[in-house]
Length: 173
Image (cartoon, rainbow, N blue to C red; front, side, top):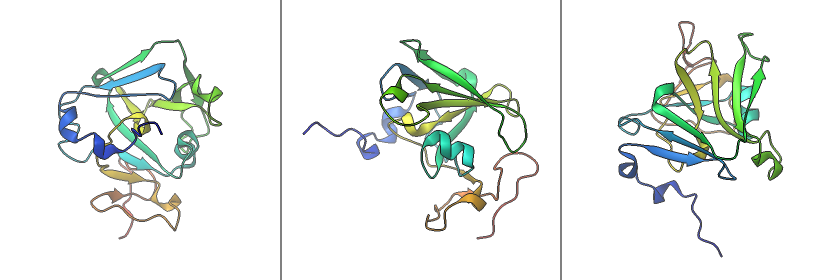
């Protein structure tokens, strides 16, 4: 049996004091985050909106909103593609970037890498599923869309819909 590598406990936070690197399934896309405070406090968010769930191929998406200049994306084989998603709650497009080669190996949109929107200039939303270790999330968005069987996360603030912006609204405990 091959060695299993997906256990995040095999990758202690201390290993990523200067940077964190992950890749898509086929290895063509490599993403490196350079942020010394990545694991110093809760960061990122879980999103239950239908678009993030579809992109993630799961019941929730683990995301990190971060300054674009702290991220390097290498596209070894030219497989990075972008889809313009206009089916958004705001009506503004979200540009969803993914590895197009991974779709040949798995039945999904392909390996999501990042999303970009005009709502966050100079920042990108990284899809954290490709990373060996994920920081504890700070927020949970679209809590109203969370499945009733899904548990709550201690220390994570849940919002009814959007987790960012002036019109965000916390969910009752």
